[in-house]
Picture: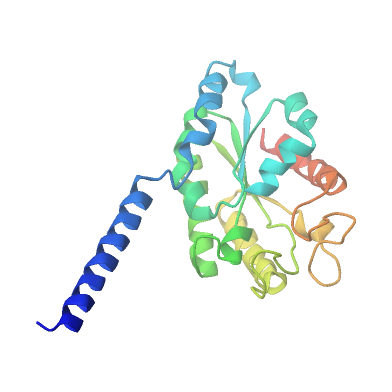
Length: 232
């Protein structure tokens, strides 16, 4: 073996070892972020059932909702289980721990925008819908009422440009609405009230074009409360 071939072989060995190490670390990582609500879930389980009737499952829009207007959740005894940046694949993985094990009467599922942004890789709209359907069907199997929300508008993502969410979100919402209607789940339509003429969020309702301001959340609260009352 020549010196050059020895160097090449050593480089390949180092690359293989490096990739193996990275993969091993990823496998050991908490990909779905089970840890985030571990302690909180234990406290919720100790509450009377009347204080944990509704769980909100979602991403940063749901997590930010609690931070922007925690009184909405506290007043109505709603449980927030949003995790920033998450896709439907991650939410499906943690759905049992963060929703089913809390034994709520209803779950409000708002998810899909990070899938379109490609946060955990490219995914077709059909597969996003499949993840949403799996969460809904798991809930139904456990006697939990399902509220499937329209994905909130976005014209573009500041962290992932050119994904055409103004086109893909309305298409996904049609799928969600059709699925909800077919399976007798409640469809919560935020999009129609929030979207501007571009199919995005106006600056008055979202400074970054994606995450609602308090004013935006107030509109969402009005909409979802009506649906929750209907569900319960």
